[in-house]
Length: 258
Image (tube, rainbow, N blue to C red; front, side, top):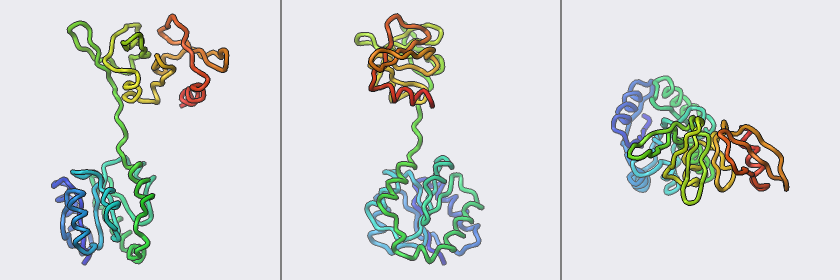
């Protein structure tokens, strides 16, 4: 009988995993379901290791990788996660498997078969994850950042939304920041350029200099300029010259090639 521990903070997900385990061809005994990092740490400090652990990545009080940093896990682990399948494939390690939510019966059976095939490996204490492995997995497991697709603008008493696809560039003028749309409309926005740089997709937008954050589609010409700088022409055009400093040029050219 394989003793299984489930670390998952969603009751529905717990019940669904139990159902799938019951429908597998293995003799399994779910000894407990734990919903938080703190409760998991307490369990491992006071109980023997189970034969298999299912870890959800996001728990009610943190991420499950925190548990590895606080207690020693010697049992084989299968992570269940809703993250992108490509990223999951990228950070697999020999002693762990991953199941993409919603979990399918066939995928679960494959993971359980892998457990049996590698049981001698898993019983070796040297198979415990190193801190470096854990940290690498944490970085890759982080959900991709969602960037803004619309920006709020105020026109008198009205509040409007401008799609980022309609934005040519943002620019600072005095203490205010403006957005210039592709159809040559200008509005004040309640963000600094630094804030916008973090909120907008860096593949689309780039900080040309201290006062301009431009969408790639707005850049119509690039000229070599004095002292290894570049001069950029935008559409809609700006009256003043837009120069990229020598220090910023390599980063700018790299961005343009994306």
